[in-house]
Structures are given as structure tokens and as C-alpha cells.
Image (cartoon, rainbow over all chains, first blue to last red; front, side):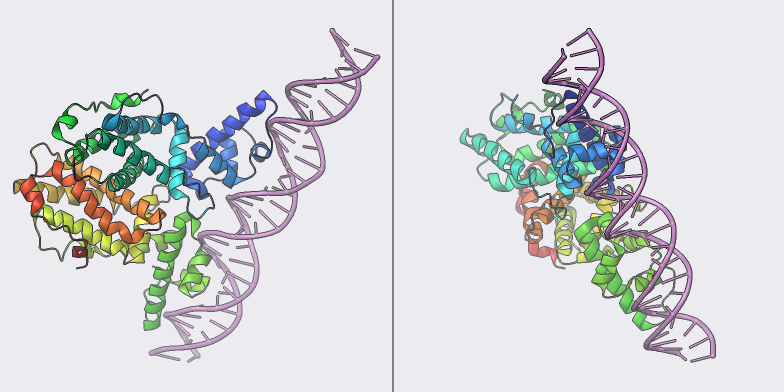
Length: 207
Length: 207
DNA sequence: AGAGGAAAAACGAACACTCGTTATGTTAAG
DNA sequence: CTTAACATAACGAGTGTTCGTTTTTCCTCT
């Protein structure tokens, strides 16, 4: 951030740029989205973009960091139901918020462009394992389930599902796909009675 | 292919270029890999690259088409075991063959660059469902399982796992991850006795 | 209240560079 | 000597970024 904004219109255009950048990054990826395309989609000129952001890298990082941490709160459920709700909220947010979609794509493409900021992968994995262990403490998990391995697999599966849904153009089916994932996973993850009383309605994602 | 090769050394350099292109595409993606980088990694100059390939698009398509269809044969197993073996061979091939890794990345990135050639997604999904239905015909599947939904999920999960393993730098753990996927999926997919007699050794991937 | 001015914000042209591609030159094989 | 196989150099378009300029906003002083 080369300048702390001191006028309200600055914040407005800064937001416009962030949204425009998200749209461009989502469509073309980091390398494919040009600063001119970003400026065009933001409704501003190149100079304005460089007034608010130091360069392309920081713009991408700003998009990644703009994904709200709103995901975690708002959920008063506990145990596995909380884990389910987390994925449903994630699915809902993905196809409601373009900034979130761009952030996921950028985080996945990252590696070479010095963004680092693992932000999504290890963070999600840690979060998943945390709730899994809480579920195990409440006796909801099947005896053989390893929380680390399950969390690792779920993070990969979720990003893969998002990828698959985006490429096939059916991003709006993400919620249903998440539900089907749970229907497949639950028998091996928990006891039948726990699985039976879980609420798998994708509409739980809209908090 | 702008020229059918008429000398043997031409075939050698053509292979060098294909391998160099695969390495570059794997590291930087389609847009990020420059023709100069490809030429450098191939040990030749730009002119040689353009003598053997018409352009970047065709070079990428050649890399994709170079992935051997060796996956399907060599497996004399049937039913779900065959499906398991298919994923294990895939995992083994991924971290043994750089051309395969590049092909997967290119196929996943495709979309905008006019490569099309879906080659991986719908094809894999069709293949998976085919073996799933064969497994159901042999009575190995649990009554509630939908072959279409399972195949769709597995394709997404597999590409997601590959992505996750590559980003975290642990591509060699792919086989173990595939095994853990099956351990999670099988309880909800088949009957306990069928699951018990399956062989999940990742070394089955090395045909 | 209203003119003056400084700083903030946005503009737009230009720079240095890399890109994919092509044209031309040079070497090796038959 | 002819042509295939490669090397070298250049072109035009597009890239990220910089910079001088203009416009807008806000604060001050009479």
C-alpha cells in the first residue's frame, strides 16, 4: 500500500480496483491478466491502479487477503456438523463472491510468483483438523479415522471440486457437490447414528 | 508439425524439445513458460523449436498428446480393484514422468488458450463411471451409491490431490494419498467384505 | 462566505523490456 | 550441390512500471 487513503472517494476506487482485479484474475489468472485489463474492468486508468497499489504482485496479494475471514464465525454448531457447515458456507461464498473465487485461483497458481502467503492451504488444513479433533473428543468419529489424513484429503478434494466445477462452467453446483462429498465420506468417518442426525442441506451455507 | 523428420538426429532433438517444454510448462504453466525458456531447457535455440513445432499452442498440444495411454491396459484386475489400480498407476506415473505432470497442468489450465482437447476431465470421468458400473454389476457396490456422482467426485478429488501435493512440494506422497482416499471412500461405497479383500498397496502402481 | 492554495487523487503518455513469431544466415547430411 | 536441420538476429505487439501533468477535494485566511 503506497498510500494510506485520506479521502472517501479513494476508498471507493480502491474497492473498485480490487473488484476489477478479482474479475480479471478469475478469468485470466495471474500471468494472463494485464494491468490494463484490470484498470479497464475497474473503470479507472493505469495511473489510479498504481496510485493505490505498488504493483501487480501486491495487487494479487491484496485480492487474496481480501477474502473475508467471516467464514468461521456465524456458526453455532459443534462437532462434525460444524465442519459440514464450514464447507457449505465456503461453497456458498465461492459462487456468491467473485473476490473469493479469484483468491482461490491465485492461491492455487501462486508458487513461482513470489506471493507465498499460503493463506489457504495450510490454514484450511489446520482449521479442518481442529474441528475434527473436537468431533473426536465428543465421540463422533469412527475409531480408525486419522484426523490429519482426513483434513489433508478434504482440503485437496475441496479445491479439486472447485476447479472441476469452474472448468465445466457449473460453479453453481458446488453446494450439491459438497453435500455428495459428505455422503460419501461420512460412512467411513463417523458412526451411523451420528451421520443420520446431521443436516446436509446446502442452504445452510447462506448464513 | 511443420515438417516430417527425415534424419534421425531430428527425432532426437524433437524429443529433447518435448521434454524441455514439459519441464517449463510444469514449472510455469502455459502462459508463464516462454519459448526462450523452453529452448534453453531443451538445449537448443529458438530456431530449432520453430523448425519442429509450428508455435506455442501446438507445442503444448504435443505435450498433452504425448501422455501415454498406457494407463488403461496392463491391468488384469476387475471390478473395484481395477478402479483402485487405475488410480495407483496414475499416481505412480505422475511422479515418475515429467511429461505427464506437464500434461495434467496444461489440461487443467486449458480453458482460454484454444487447446480444448478435454483429454483428461470428461474422459477420466467416463472411464471411472464405466468401471464403477461394472463393479455394481458384480454386486460390489453399496445399494445407495450413484456411479455418476461418485465418478464426478473422484475426478475432482484426484486432480485436487495432485495439485495439493505439487504445491506443498511433496509430489512423491501422491500414492499414499490415493490409498488414504480409498480408505475413506470404501466404507460408503461398497460392502465391508468387499473392502476387506481389496489390495491397497501403492506399489501396485508400478506396472 | 468565498477566494487561494496545498495536498490528494486520478489521468495518460512514455519507457524499458519481454513476448511469440518470422526472416535470414550458417552448418551438417545424403 | 541440394536440402534438411539448426543457429542467429530482428520485428511488432504487448507487458509492467514510471512520471509529469491535470483534476478534484479539503482546509485556511480574509
